[in-house]
Length: 363
Image (cartoon, rainbow, N blue to C red; front, side, top):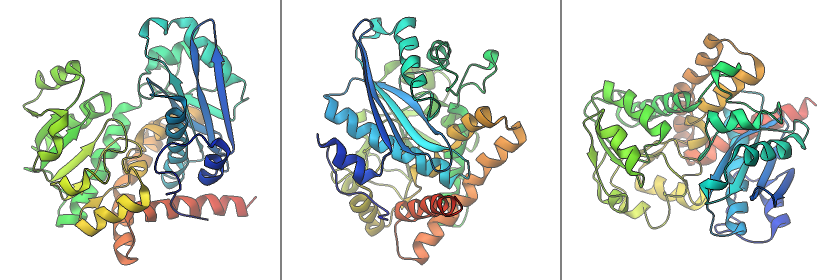
């Protein structure tokens, strides 16, 4: 079983070939003329449990690009749940939409009906463009949803848990690189300061880190600058910033052949999914440059752990214990990668796949 997938560095319209390459079980395309709803649900692997993954709404350039994104995201969810020790599979849904006026209650309840059609094989949750408000609409038509509002019996917004896991992963990577996990005085560049990025900054400020931020959303920038003393840079200039830690917390693939030669950091540890545009090539490029990469699907696993709490009825203590393990697991992945002369991304995928294979062998 291949540990990496470099077959498709760019989107392709060959759907079945991509499914085979990424080892997906099922893809559901959906369309509703009345509401303007259209998108894709991808179920990657259900060996460990039902496929859980958020619903992302984005204005994709075309359907080929949308498919590529949902395949990569759902595969990452499989590995995220596995390496973090929870019994869920990996899935994801994307909605192709640029008109916010169309996103009515009926729009979201219709999406809930498509989720329900999979009979529990896929559990949806929040992602880019969705919140507990949309989740409340979706759950009118399906019980296969997580991240429900607290007042409706759910675990609420998973963003704080995601941010805390990233913070722990960042500290573990810092300890591996420097011998100490203190972030006091560390220069940290955060690309994307939405919900997760904002919670992450709260943790970093308490450690007296020196924070630089970039975001295309002026509202997000304002929310941070009114609360904390940070430096703001143009998103197009982020790779000109001299920093100790680069934290991608927006969309994926910012670590690529163009950006890696420009990076001025020792560590990459962020919340975004699929940060490496190509796992094999760009993981090796970082290794060759001596940049320590904390695998995204490991350190951003706090959110899915919070969703798991809701699905399985875990206590707060049980949930917090799972999130806190991200620190130790991150250090162990970096150490094992060094000992095996591998990249952290490849090592983390191997660990995730080992747990899945063990479950298959046990039937």
